[in-house]
Image (cartoon, rainbow, N blue to C red):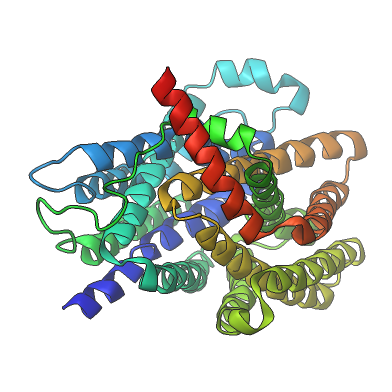
Length: 449
């Protein structure tokens, strides 16, 4: 039964693969390229889910699931609340998108137009609710993993969960792309409704019955926990911790800034319809990423986490350079080659960086994974929202969307380069040695207060 539960837990993020793939790819592309809504607004809406993490929702959810019990359960109620919030807001998102009335508004006139748009306000609330659910559900899920799985298998289950999420995103993109070859708003709404139900069903299968009633966490029960304020003090007073948090910020920015850009890029530059972009970008780039996540993951003990990340960074820089070239030449064959090369880089770098994050904990997984997660969420917010602003601003000055996307992909290439330059400065041994001293100082200062 225990082995079966481990397998079930790995399936949990498949539901998020369905929902995030639809929001980042299909709905994003429809809103920006078909409905004509400013990408500053669209990308900003999508990135709201990450901003919530920066404001402490992860920390709140983790602390609540540590301290409170609902019918004898600590983690499961918060996973359920989070998933229900995600699913219901996800189902409503395409309906609300078609109620937004600021299509075609010039960039300079966005603020007054936004203030008068009730549909946009509804969409803001929907994405905030989705973000709240995402942060609460995933935080409680990782806490359940830590309670149930233990150190020996947590890396394997986490890697399997991420891999299944990427695979689900790719498969669902192919299915959705085929269904939307004949496009209509009603079909888009059908996808959200069915996708939400499937996501909820997968989540319920994955976690229901895994947590034992009135159970006690296996580890950390005798450790003093750190508050959000203490975690910030720990980060600001620890140079090695600050360095790795900055590295995670830059590396995640490089990896995920393109996440919601590719389908609008295909529409704006290559003139591809919804079904074609849905079937091209996620399956090609994401499929290659998945393969190399698995390959590099199996080889990571031999090549090392830092070397794996460096190799991924090199392929990422090369891939996005080829994608920029394909856009200026309008060569779809070159575009496909660039997507494959970039996918190799994303796969190698993502699995290496995820593994690095999981091991850079100094025996305090809750504290440090929370810090790394906050840096990750901030990077994804800046990457997603920043890409939207760059797309609008550069287009306003140049009149050519290709220059907008060249600026976005060029910024990613720069981030991959900065991450590569930081890698030699990262040392797990130095980090752990510093961590023991700094955590003791933070706790002692709290006791003195």
